[in-house]
Image (tube, rainbow, N blue to C red):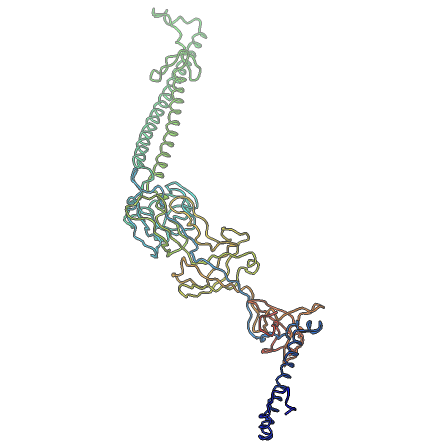
Length: 565
Protein backbone atom coordinates (compact mmCIF):
# COMPACT_ATOMS: atom_id res chain seq x y z
CA UNK A 1 0.00 0.00 0.00
CA UNK A 2 2.94 2.23 0.62
CA UNK A 3 3.70 2.58 -3.16
CA UNK A 4 0.40 4.41 -3.72
CA UNK A 5 1.09 7.23 -1.29
CA UNK A 6 0.94 10.67 -2.99
CA UNK A 7 -0.80 9.29 -6.04
CA UNK A 8 -4.31 9.79 -7.29
CA UNK A 9 -4.55 6.14 -8.16
CA UNK A 10 -6.32 4.27 -5.51
CA UNK A 11 -5.54 0.74 -4.67
CA UNK A 12 -8.90 -0.22 -6.13
CA UNK A 13 -8.05 1.41 -9.42
CA UNK A 14 -4.75 -0.19 -9.60
CA UNK A 15 -6.35 -3.45 -8.92
CA UNK A 16 -8.78 -2.81 -11.73
CA UNK A 17 -5.94 -2.00 -14.15
CA UNK A 18 -4.28 -5.11 -13.35
CA UNK A 19 -7.52 -6.97 -13.61
CA UNK A 20 -8.55 -5.21 -16.89
CA UNK A 21 -5.39 -6.10 -18.58
CA UNK A 22 -3.86 -3.94 -21.42
CA UNK A 23 -7.11 -2.62 -23.08
CA UNK A 24 -7.38 0.60 -21.11
CA UNK A 25 -3.64 1.21 -21.46
CA UNK A 26 -3.89 1.21 -25.20
CA UNK A 27 -6.62 3.87 -25.13
CA UNK A 28 -4.57 6.10 -22.95
CA UNK A 29 -1.61 5.90 -25.28
CA UNK A 30 -3.75 6.88 -28.28
CA UNK A 31 -5.07 9.98 -26.53
CA UNK A 32 -1.55 11.04 -25.72
CA UNK A 33 -0.51 10.66 -29.37
CA UNK A 34 -3.39 12.83 -30.59
CA UNK A 35 -2.49 15.54 -28.15
CA UNK A 36 1.11 15.55 -29.32
CA UNK A 37 0.10 15.83 -33.02
CA UNK A 38 -2.29 18.70 -32.33
CA UNK A 39 0.42 20.58 -30.55
CA UNK A 40 2.78 20.06 -33.49
CA UNK A 41 0.21 21.37 -35.99
CA UNK A 42 -0.41 24.45 -33.87
CA UNK A 43 3.30 25.17 -33.68
CA UNK A 44 3.66 24.79 -37.47
CA UNK A 45 0.76 27.16 -38.11
CA UNK A 46 2.22 29.78 -35.86
CA UNK A 47 5.50 29.55 -37.72
CA UNK A 48 3.80 30.05 -41.06
CA UNK A 49 1.90 33.08 -39.77
CA UNK A 50 5.07 34.52 -38.40
CA UNK A 51 6.82 33.97 -41.71
CA UNK A 52 4.14 35.98 -43.59
CA UNK A 53 4.39 38.89 -41.26
CA UNK A 54 8.15 39.11 -41.19
CA UNK A 55 9.78 39.70 -44.68
CA UNK A 56 13.21 40.64 -45.85
CA UNK A 57 13.66 43.92 -47.84
CA UNK A 58 14.29 42.00 -51.08
CA UNK A 59 11.15 39.95 -50.58
CA UNK A 60 9.10 43.06 -49.85
CA UNK A 61 10.35 44.75 -53.08
CA UNK A 62 9.58 41.65 -55.11
CA UNK A 63 6.11 41.41 -53.68
CA UNK A 64 5.39 45.10 -54.58
CA UNK A 65 6.06 44.60 -58.34
CA UNK A 66 2.94 44.37 -60.64
CA UNK A 67 2.01 41.05 -62.17
CA UNK A 68 3.37 40.24 -65.60
CA UNK A 69 1.54 42.47 -68.18
CA UNK A 70 -0.71 41.16 -70.97
CA UNK A 71 -0.81 42.76 -74.49
CA UNK A 72 -3.80 44.26 -76.32
CA UNK A 73 -3.97 43.52 -80.03
CA UNK A 74 -6.09 44.41 -83.05
CA UNK A 75 -6.41 42.73 -86.41
CA UNK A 76 -4.93 44.24 -89.55
CA UNK A 77 -7.77 45.14 -91.97
CA UNK A 78 -7.83 45.59 -95.71
CA UNK A 79 -10.39 48.18 -96.78
CA UNK A 80 -10.91 51.62 -98.28
CA UNK A 81 -9.91 54.17 -95.67
CA UNK A 82 -11.63 57.55 -95.53
CA UNK A 83 -11.08 60.57 -93.34
CA UNK A 84 -14.38 62.25 -92.53
CA UNK A 85 -15.44 65.56 -91.00
CA UNK A 86 -18.90 65.51 -89.44
CA UNK A 87 -20.73 68.79 -88.78
CA UNK A 88 -24.30 70.09 -88.62
CA UNK A 89 -25.92 71.99 -91.47
CA UNK A 90 -29.08 73.88 -92.33
CA UNK A 91 -31.01 73.21 -95.55
CA UNK A 92 -32.14 76.40 -97.22
CA UNK A 93 -32.77 77.80 -100.66
CA UNK A 94 -30.20 79.74 -102.60
CA UNK A 95 -32.33 82.86 -102.06
CA UNK A 96 -34.69 83.64 -99.21
CA UNK A 97 -36.54 86.95 -98.98
CA UNK A 98 -39.02 88.56 -96.64
CA UNK A 99 -41.92 90.14 -98.52
CA UNK A 100 -42.62 93.46 -96.85
CA UNK A 101 -44.44 95.73 -99.34
CA UNK A 102 -43.55 99.09 -97.82
CA UNK A 103 -45.57 101.92 -99.32
CA UNK A 104 -48.18 99.55 -100.71
CA UNK A 105 -51.77 100.58 -100.79
CA UNK A 106 -52.46 101.89 -104.27
CA UNK A 107 -54.55 105.05 -104.04
CA UNK A 108 -53.31 107.98 -102.02
CA UNK A 109 -54.45 107.74 -98.42
CA UNK A 110 -55.34 104.03 -98.58
CA UNK A 111 -54.17 102.03 -95.59
CA UNK A 112 -51.72 99.21 -96.36
CA UNK A 113 -54.09 96.45 -95.29
CA UNK A 114 -53.72 92.86 -96.52
CA UNK A 115 -56.78 92.21 -98.68
CA UNK A 116 -55.78 88.89 -100.21
CA UNK A 117 -53.37 86.19 -99.01
CA UNK A 118 -53.79 83.18 -101.28
CA UNK A 119 -50.71 81.20 -100.16
CA UNK A 120 -49.83 79.08 -97.14
CA UNK A 121 -46.60 77.56 -95.89
CA UNK A 122 -45.25 74.98 -98.31
CA UNK A 123 -47.12 76.29 -101.36
CA UNK A 124 -45.23 76.77 -104.59
CA UNK A 125 -45.00 80.14 -106.31
CA UNK A 126 -44.89 80.44 -110.09
CA UNK A 127 -43.47 83.27 -112.18
CA UNK A 128 -46.01 86.05 -112.74
CA UNK A 129 -48.16 84.97 -109.80
CA UNK A 130 -49.50 87.45 -107.26
CA UNK A 131 -48.30 86.32 -103.82
CA UNK A 132 -50.51 88.73 -101.89
CA UNK A 133 -52.65 91.84 -102.25
CA UNK A 134 -52.37 95.02 -100.18
CA UNK A 135 -55.25 97.52 -100.33
CA UNK A 136 -56.36 95.95 -103.57
CA UNK A 137 -52.93 96.19 -105.20
CA UNK A 138 -51.00 93.03 -106.18
CA UNK A 139 -47.44 91.93 -105.43
CA UNK A 140 -46.14 89.98 -108.42
CA UNK A 141 -43.29 87.46 -108.32
CA UNK A 142 -41.06 87.82 -111.38
CA UNK A 143 -37.83 86.18 -112.46
CA UNK A 144 -34.68 88.16 -111.75
CA UNK A 145 -31.57 88.33 -109.58
CA UNK A 146 -31.46 92.10 -109.01
CA UNK A 147 -33.63 93.16 -106.04
CA UNK A 148 -36.15 95.92 -106.67
CA UNK A 149 -35.09 99.26 -105.20
CA UNK A 150 -37.17 101.90 -107.03
CA UNK A 151 -40.41 102.45 -108.89
CA UNK A 152 -40.06 101.67 -112.58
CA UNK A 153 -41.64 104.44 -114.64
CA UNK A 154 -41.80 105.38 -118.32
CA UNK A 155 -38.58 107.00 -119.39
CA UNK A 156 -36.47 105.15 -116.82
CA UNK A 157 -33.28 103.38 -117.89
CA UNK A 158 -31.01 100.85 -116.22
CA UNK A 159 -30.38 97.18 -115.49
CA UNK A 160 -33.53 96.90 -113.39
CA UNK A 161 -35.59 98.05 -116.39
CA UNK A 162 -33.83 95.47 -118.55
CA UNK A 163 -34.64 92.81 -115.94
CA UNK A 164 -38.33 93.81 -115.97
CA UNK A 165 -38.40 93.64 -119.77
CA UNK A 166 -36.83 90.17 -119.74
CA UNK A 167 -39.20 88.88 -117.04
CA UNK A 168 -42.26 90.12 -118.96
CA UNK A 169 -40.89 88.63 -122.19
CA UNK A 170 -40.56 85.23 -120.49
CA UNK A 171 -44.27 85.47 -119.68
CA UNK A 172 -45.16 86.37 -123.27
CA UNK A 173 -45.25 90.18 -123.02
CA UNK A 174 -42.41 91.53 -125.15
CA UNK A 175 -41.29 95.17 -125.15
CA UNK A 176 -41.18 95.50 -128.91
CA UNK A 177 -39.46 98.60 -130.23
CA UNK A 178 -37.73 99.56 -126.98
CA UNK A 179 -34.00 99.41 -126.47
CA UNK A 180 -32.82 97.08 -123.70
CA UNK A 181 -32.96 98.88 -120.38
CA UNK A 182 -35.20 101.73 -121.62
CA UNK A 183 -38.79 102.02 -120.37
CA UNK A 184 -40.41 103.18 -123.57
CA UNK A 185 -43.63 102.69 -125.50
CA UNK A 186 -43.06 98.97 -125.97
CA UNK A 187 -42.48 98.40 -122.27
CA UNK A 188 -45.57 100.40 -121.38
CA UNK A 189 -47.66 98.23 -123.65
CA UNK A 190 -46.15 95.07 -122.14
CA UNK A 191 -46.93 96.28 -118.60
CA UNK A 192 -50.53 97.14 -119.57
CA UNK A 193 -51.11 93.72 -121.09
CA UNK A 194 -49.48 91.88 -118.19
CA UNK A 195 -51.59 93.63 -115.56
CA UNK A 196 -54.74 93.19 -117.63
CA UNK A 197 -54.06 89.45 -117.97
CA UNK A 198 -53.91 89.24 -114.15
CA UNK A 199 -57.10 91.20 -113.67
CA UNK A 200 -55.60 94.50 -112.53
CA UNK A 201 -55.15 98.01 -113.89
CA UNK A 202 -51.58 99.29 -113.75
CA UNK A 203 -50.80 102.36 -111.69
CA UNK A 204 -50.37 105.57 -113.75
CA UNK A 205 -46.92 107.04 -113.63
CA UNK A 206 -48.42 110.49 -112.88
CA UNK A 207 -51.95 111.16 -111.65
CA UNK A 208 -52.65 113.76 -114.39
CA UNK A 209 -50.45 112.33 -117.11
CA UNK A 210 -53.15 112.41 -119.82
CA UNK A 211 -54.08 115.98 -118.93
CA UNK A 212 -50.45 117.01 -119.21
CA UNK A 213 -50.24 115.45 -122.66
CA UNK A 214 -53.42 117.26 -123.75
CA UNK A 215 -52.13 120.59 -122.48
CA UNK A 216 -48.81 120.09 -124.23
CA UNK A 217 -50.59 119.24 -127.48
CA UNK A 218 -52.75 122.38 -127.19
CA UNK A 219 -49.62 124.44 -126.71
CA UNK A 220 -48.17 122.91 -129.85
CA UNK A 221 -51.29 123.90 -131.76
CA UNK A 222 -50.87 127.49 -130.58
CA UNK A 223 -47.22 127.41 -131.54
CA UNK A 224 -48.04 126.11 -135.00
CA UNK A 225 -50.51 128.99 -135.52
CA UNK A 226 -48.02 131.54 -134.32
CA UNK A 227 -45.47 130.17 -136.76
CA UNK A 228 -47.99 130.32 -139.60
CA UNK A 229 -48.80 133.94 -138.76
CA UNK A 230 -45.12 134.81 -138.64
CA UNK A 231 -44.56 133.21 -141.99
CA UNK A 232 -47.49 135.17 -143.49
CA UNK A 233 -46.07 138.40 -142.07
CA UNK A 234 -42.69 137.57 -143.57
CA UNK A 235 -44.26 136.88 -146.93
CA UNK A 236 -46.08 140.23 -146.84
CA UNK A 237 -42.96 142.09 -145.78
CA UNK A 238 -41.01 140.58 -148.65
CA UNK A 239 -43.71 141.61 -151.11
CA UNK A 240 -43.67 145.16 -149.79
CA UNK A 241 -39.92 145.20 -150.09
CA UNK A 242 -40.12 144.04 -153.69
CA UNK A 243 -42.70 146.73 -154.43
CA UNK A 244 -40.55 149.40 -152.81
CA UNK A 245 -37.50 148.34 -154.82
CA UNK A 246 -39.52 148.35 -158.09
CA UNK A 247 -40.91 151.85 -157.38
CA UNK A 248 -37.46 153.13 -156.57
CA UNK A 249 -36.12 151.82 -159.83
CA UNK A 250 -38.93 153.50 -161.79
CA UNK A 251 -38.20 156.82 -160.12
CA UNK A 252 -34.53 156.44 -160.81
CA UNK A 253 -35.26 155.72 -164.49
CA UNK A 254 -37.51 158.79 -164.74
CA UNK A 255 -34.82 160.94 -163.17
CA UNK A 256 -32.26 159.68 -165.63
CA UNK A 257 -34.56 160.53 -168.52
CA UNK A 258 -35.14 164.05 -167.18
CA UNK A 259 -31.44 164.63 -166.80
CA UNK A 260 -30.87 163.52 -170.35
CA UNK A 261 -33.50 165.96 -171.63
CA UNK A 262 -31.94 168.78 -169.64
CA UNK A 263 -28.57 168.02 -171.10
CA UNK A 264 -29.95 168.11 -174.60
CA UNK A 265 -31.57 171.48 -174.01
CA UNK A 266 -28.35 172.92 -172.67
CA UNK A 267 -26.61 171.86 -175.91
CA UNK A 268 -29.01 174.09 -178.10
CA UNK A 269 -28.74 177.78 -176.74
CA UNK A 270 -30.43 179.48 -179.76
CA UNK A 271 -33.56 177.62 -179.26
CA UNK A 272 -36.10 179.54 -177.35
CA UNK A 273 -37.37 178.04 -174.25
CA UNK A 274 -40.39 176.09 -174.97
CA UNK A 275 -42.28 177.86 -172.33
CA UNK A 276 -41.37 181.26 -173.68
CA UNK A 277 -42.31 180.37 -177.26
CA UNK A 278 -45.62 179.12 -176.36
CA UNK A 279 -46.28 181.62 -173.65
CA UNK A 280 -46.47 178.81 -171.09
CA UNK A 281 -44.69 178.60 -167.88
CA UNK A 282 -40.98 178.15 -167.73
CA UNK A 283 -39.80 174.54 -167.77
CA UNK A 284 -38.52 173.29 -164.49
CA UNK A 285 -36.22 170.35 -163.68
CA UNK A 286 -37.85 167.21 -162.36
CA UNK A 287 -37.80 166.67 -158.64
CA UNK A 288 -35.07 164.40 -157.34
CA UNK A 289 -36.01 160.77 -156.63
CA UNK A 290 -34.63 158.32 -154.10
CA UNK A 291 -32.81 155.46 -155.73
CA UNK A 292 -32.71 152.02 -154.20
CA UNK A 293 -30.21 151.90 -151.43
CA UNK A 294 -29.28 155.59 -151.60
CA UNK A 295 -31.01 156.55 -148.40
CA UNK A 296 -32.32 159.81 -149.96
CA UNK A 297 -35.90 160.82 -149.57
CA UNK A 298 -38.28 160.43 -152.49
CA UNK A 299 -41.80 159.68 -153.39
CA UNK A 300 -41.40 156.15 -154.70
CA UNK A 301 -43.47 153.45 -153.11
CA UNK A 302 -46.36 154.56 -151.06
CA UNK A 303 -47.47 151.03 -150.22
CA UNK A 304 -44.60 149.96 -147.97
CA UNK A 305 -44.07 150.49 -144.23
CA UNK A 306 -43.84 154.01 -143.00
CA UNK A 307 -40.30 155.26 -143.44
CA UNK A 308 -38.49 156.85 -140.56
CA UNK A 309 -37.09 160.35 -141.03
CA UNK A 310 -34.12 160.10 -143.37
CA UNK A 311 -34.94 156.46 -144.26
CA UNK A 312 -35.96 155.44 -147.73
CA UNK A 313 -39.01 153.23 -148.33
CA UNK A 314 -36.69 150.46 -149.51
CA UNK A 315 -34.70 150.55 -146.28
CA UNK A 316 -37.89 150.57 -144.27
CA UNK A 317 -39.18 147.58 -146.24
CA UNK A 318 -35.87 145.78 -145.72
CA UNK A 319 -36.08 146.34 -141.95
CA UNK A 320 -39.62 145.01 -141.96
CA UNK A 321 -38.45 141.83 -143.73
CA UNK A 322 -35.66 141.29 -141.21
CA UNK A 323 -38.08 141.74 -138.31
CA UNK A 324 -40.56 139.29 -139.84
CA UNK A 325 -37.75 136.75 -140.40
CA UNK A 326 -36.78 136.94 -136.74
CA UNK A 327 -40.38 136.29 -135.77
CA UNK A 328 -40.47 133.20 -137.96
CA UNK A 329 -37.19 131.92 -136.48
CA UNK A 330 -38.41 132.43 -132.93
CA UNK A 331 -41.77 130.86 -133.65
CA UNK A 332 -40.01 127.84 -135.16
CA UNK A 333 -37.80 127.44 -132.08
CA UNK A 334 -40.77 127.82 -129.74
CA UNK A 335 -42.73 125.22 -131.66
CA UNK A 336 -39.84 122.74 -131.45
CA UNK A 337 -39.75 123.18 -127.67
CA UNK A 338 -43.50 122.70 -127.41
CA UNK A 339 -43.32 119.56 -129.51
CA UNK A 340 -40.56 118.19 -127.25
CA UNK A 341 -42.79 118.84 -124.26
CA UNK A 342 -45.47 116.76 -125.92
CA UNK A 343 -42.96 113.96 -126.47
CA UNK A 344 -41.77 114.16 -122.87
CA UNK A 345 -45.33 114.25 -121.56
CA UNK A 346 -46.26 111.22 -123.62
CA UNK A 347 -43.11 109.41 -122.50
CA UNK A 348 -43.77 110.17 -118.84
CA UNK A 349 -47.43 109.26 -119.04
CA UNK A 350 -48.65 105.70 -118.99
CA UNK A 351 -48.36 102.73 -116.62
CA UNK A 352 -45.65 102.33 -114.01
CA UNK A 353 -44.62 99.39 -111.83
CA UNK A 354 -44.26 100.43 -108.17
CA UNK A 355 -41.47 98.82 -106.17
CA UNK A 356 -44.08 97.65 -103.66
CA UNK A 357 -45.71 95.54 -106.37
CA UNK A 358 -42.59 93.67 -107.46
CA UNK A 359 -40.79 90.64 -106.02
CA UNK A 360 -37.84 89.40 -108.05
CA UNK A 361 -36.79 85.78 -107.38
CA UNK A 362 -33.83 83.89 -108.81
CA UNK A 363 -35.75 80.78 -109.83
CA UNK A 364 -39.12 79.10 -110.08
CA UNK A 365 -41.04 77.38 -108.72
CA UNK A 366 -40.35 79.20 -105.45
CA UNK A 367 -41.60 78.12 -102.02
CA UNK A 368 -43.48 79.82 -99.20
CA UNK A 369 -41.45 79.27 -96.02
CA UNK A 370 -43.46 81.39 -93.59
CA UNK A 371 -46.66 83.44 -93.46
CA UNK A 372 -46.58 86.24 -90.90
CA UNK A 373 -49.48 88.37 -92.13
CA UNK A 374 -53.22 87.86 -92.16
CA UNK A 375 -56.12 89.16 -94.20
CA UNK A 376 -57.32 92.42 -92.70
CA UNK A 377 -54.05 93.04 -90.90
CA UNK A 378 -52.15 96.24 -91.53
CA UNK A 379 -48.72 95.78 -93.05
CA UNK A 380 -46.08 96.76 -90.52
CA UNK A 381 -43.31 94.34 -91.47
CA UNK A 382 -42.85 91.14 -93.37
CA UNK A 383 -45.96 89.35 -94.55
CA UNK A 384 -44.36 86.35 -96.24
CA UNK A 385 -41.00 84.63 -96.40
CA UNK A 386 -40.36 83.12 -99.81
CA UNK A 387 -37.37 81.05 -100.89
CA UNK A 388 -36.28 80.41 -104.44
CA UNK A 389 -33.62 78.55 -106.31
CA UNK A 390 -32.18 75.11 -105.64
CA UNK A 391 -31.94 73.90 -102.05
CA UNK A 392 -28.43 74.05 -100.63
CA UNK A 393 -26.97 73.21 -97.22
CA UNK A 394 -25.00 75.69 -95.16
CA UNK A 395 -22.77 74.66 -92.29
CA UNK A 396 -19.92 75.97 -90.17
CA UNK A 397 -16.42 74.52 -89.86
CA UNK A 398 -14.16 74.71 -86.82
CA UNK A 399 -10.67 76.05 -87.33
CA UNK A 400 -9.26 72.51 -87.08
CA UNK A 401 -11.68 71.14 -89.68
CA UNK A 402 -11.32 74.04 -92.10
CA UNK A 403 -7.91 72.85 -93.25
CA UNK A 404 -9.36 69.46 -94.18
CA UNK A 405 -12.35 70.68 -96.20
CA UNK A 406 -12.04 72.10 -99.70
CA UNK A 407 -14.44 72.79 -102.59
CA UNK A 408 -15.22 69.70 -104.63
CA UNK A 409 -15.06 67.16 -101.80
CA UNK A 410 -17.88 64.63 -101.46
CA UNK A 411 -20.49 65.21 -98.76
CA UNK A 412 -23.20 62.92 -97.41
CA UNK A 413 -26.34 64.76 -96.31
CA UNK A 414 -28.50 62.96 -93.76
CA UNK A 415 -31.76 64.07 -92.20
CA UNK A 416 -32.26 62.19 -88.94
CA UNK A 417 -35.87 63.41 -88.87
CA UNK A 418 -37.00 61.94 -92.19
CA UNK A 419 -34.19 59.47 -92.85
CA UNK A 420 -33.56 61.05 -96.25
CA UNK A 421 -30.01 60.77 -97.54
CA UNK A 422 -28.45 62.74 -100.37
CA UNK A 423 -25.03 63.26 -101.88
CA UNK A 424 -23.39 66.55 -102.65
CA UNK A 425 -20.12 68.39 -102.92
CA UNK A 426 -18.51 71.23 -101.04
CA UNK A 427 -19.33 74.33 -103.04
CA UNK A 428 -17.56 77.07 -101.10
CA UNK A 429 -15.69 77.61 -97.84
CA UNK A 430 -15.28 81.08 -96.34
CA UNK A 431 -11.80 82.36 -95.59
CA UNK A 432 -12.86 84.15 -92.43
CA UNK A 433 -15.08 83.02 -89.56
CA UNK A 434 -18.38 84.59 -88.70
CA UNK A 435 -21.88 84.79 -90.10
CA UNK A 436 -20.79 86.09 -93.49
CA UNK A 437 -21.69 84.07 -96.55
CA UNK A 438 -19.02 82.26 -98.56
CA UNK A 439 -18.26 83.24 -102.11
CA UNK A 440 -21.05 82.20 -104.42
CA UNK A 441 -23.91 82.86 -102.02
CA UNK A 442 -27.01 84.67 -103.09
CA UNK A 443 -26.77 88.47 -103.18
CA UNK A 444 -28.61 90.47 -100.56
CA UNK A 445 -31.82 92.16 -101.39
CA UNK A 446 -32.28 95.90 -101.55
CA UNK A 447 -35.13 98.24 -100.74
CA UNK A 448 -38.71 97.97 -101.89
CA UNK A 449 -40.92 94.98 -101.38
CA UNK A 450 -38.25 92.43 -100.51
CA UNK A 451 -35.51 92.04 -97.96
CA UNK A 452 -33.01 89.25 -97.30
CA UNK A 453 -34.30 86.74 -94.78
CA UNK A 454 -32.04 86.33 -91.71
CA UNK A 455 -29.98 83.19 -91.34
CA UNK A 456 -31.56 80.45 -89.25
CA UNK A 457 -29.96 78.37 -86.52
CA UNK A 458 -26.31 78.25 -85.63
CA UNK A 459 -25.24 76.32 -88.70
CA UNK A 460 -23.04 79.16 -89.93
CA UNK A 461 -20.96 79.44 -86.75
CA UNK A 462 -17.26 79.08 -87.50
CA UNK A 463 -16.15 79.18 -91.12
CA UNK A 464 -19.28 79.17 -93.31
CA UNK A 465 -19.47 76.35 -95.83
CA UNK A 466 -21.99 75.74 -98.63
CA UNK A 467 -22.81 72.24 -99.89
CA UNK A 468 -24.25 71.91 -103.40
CA UNK A 469 -26.35 68.72 -103.79
CA UNK A 470 -25.60 66.46 -106.76
CA UNK A 471 -29.34 66.27 -107.47
CA UNK A 472 -32.25 68.46 -106.35
CA UNK A 473 -32.96 67.84 -102.68
CA UNK A 474 -36.26 66.50 -101.42
CA UNK A 475 -38.47 69.55 -100.70
CA UNK A 476 -39.21 68.06 -97.28
CA UNK A 477 -35.66 68.93 -96.24
CA UNK A 478 -36.23 72.67 -96.60
CA UNK A 479 -35.47 74.36 -93.29
CA UNK A 480 -34.25 71.16 -91.60
CA UNK A 481 -31.13 70.67 -89.52
CA UNK A 482 -29.09 67.87 -91.08
CA UNK A 483 -25.85 65.99 -90.53
CA UNK A 484 -23.04 66.59 -93.02
CA UNK A 485 -20.28 64.04 -93.43
CA UNK A 486 -17.46 65.44 -95.54
CA UNK A 487 -15.07 62.91 -97.04
CA UNK A 488 -11.94 64.93 -96.49
CA UNK A 489 -9.51 62.20 -97.71
CA UNK A 490 -9.73 58.67 -99.12
CA UNK A 491 -7.38 55.86 -100.13
CA UNK A 492 -7.29 54.97 -103.81
CA UNK A 493 -8.60 51.48 -103.05
CA UNK A 494 -8.50 48.75 -100.38
CA UNK A 495 -5.36 49.11 -98.27
CA UNK A 496 -3.92 47.60 -95.08
CA UNK A 497 -5.36 49.50 -92.13
CA UNK A 498 -4.37 49.43 -88.44
CA UNK A 499 -5.46 51.51 -85.44
CA UNK A 500 -3.41 54.64 -84.93
CA UNK A 501 -2.22 53.32 -81.56
CA UNK A 502 -0.51 50.41 -83.35
CA UNK A 503 1.89 52.74 -85.16
CA UNK A 504 5.01 53.86 -83.32
CA UNK A 505 8.41 55.34 -84.08
CA UNK A 506 11.76 53.87 -83.14
CA UNK A 507 14.70 55.77 -81.76
CA UNK A 508 16.27 55.92 -85.20
CA UNK A 509 13.15 57.48 -86.72
CA UNK A 510 11.62 54.41 -88.40
CA UNK A 511 7.86 53.88 -88.37
CA UNK A 512 6.87 50.39 -87.25
CA UNK A 513 4.03 48.19 -86.12
CA UNK A 514 4.55 45.23 -83.79
CA UNK A 515 3.03 41.91 -84.81
CA UNK A 516 2.11 39.57 -81.96
CA UNK A 517 2.08 35.90 -82.99
CA UNK A 518 2.23 32.76 -80.81
CA UNK A 519 3.42 34.80 -77.86
CA UNK A 520 6.25 36.31 -79.88
CA UNK A 521 6.67 39.94 -80.98
CA UNK A 522 7.91 40.97 -84.41
CA UNK A 523 8.49 44.53 -85.60
CA UNK A 524 7.53 45.42 -89.15
CA UNK A 525 8.74 48.67 -90.68
CA UNK A 526 5.95 50.46 -92.57
CA UNK A 527 5.19 53.63 -94.49
CA UNK A 528 2.04 55.41 -93.22
CA UNK A 529 -0.60 56.69 -95.65
CA UNK A 530 -4.13 58.07 -95.34
CA UNK A 531 -5.31 58.70 -91.77
CA UNK A 532 -8.94 58.87 -90.77
CA UNK A 533 -11.47 57.68 -88.24
CA UNK A 534 -8.78 56.64 -85.71
CA UNK A 535 -7.08 54.35 -88.24
CA UNK A 536 -4.09 54.63 -90.51
CA UNK A 537 -3.07 53.10 -93.81
CA UNK A 538 0.27 51.24 -93.57
CA UNK A 539 2.44 49.83 -96.33
CA UNK A 540 5.16 47.35 -95.25
CA UNK A 541 8.60 48.13 -96.66
CA UNK A 542 9.26 44.43 -97.11
CA UNK A 543 6.69 42.45 -99.03
CA UNK A 544 4.63 39.82 -97.20
CA UNK A 545 5.82 40.92 -93.76
CA UNK A 546 2.36 42.22 -92.91
CA UNK A 547 -0.98 40.90 -94.14
CA UNK A 548 -4.69 41.12 -93.44
CA UNK A 549 -5.65 39.34 -90.24
CA UNK A 550 -2.27 39.74 -88.48
CA UNK A 551 -2.56 40.84 -84.86
CA UNK A 552 -0.68 44.03 -84.04
CA UNK A 553 -0.06 45.34 -80.55
CA UNK A 554 -2.06 48.45 -79.72
CA UNK A 555 -1.30 48.52 -75.98
CA UNK A 556 -0.89 46.45 -72.80
CA UNK A 557 -3.10 45.77 -69.82
CA UNK A 558 -2.31 44.59 -66.34
CA UNK A 559 -3.24 41.10 -65.16
CA UNK A 560 -6.43 42.36 -63.55
CA UNK A 561 -7.66 43.82 -66.84
CA UNK A 562 -7.78 47.28 -65.29
CA UNK A 563 -7.04 48.96 -68.62
CA UNK A 564 -4.54 49.61 -71.37
CA UNK A 565 -1.20 51.17 -70.77
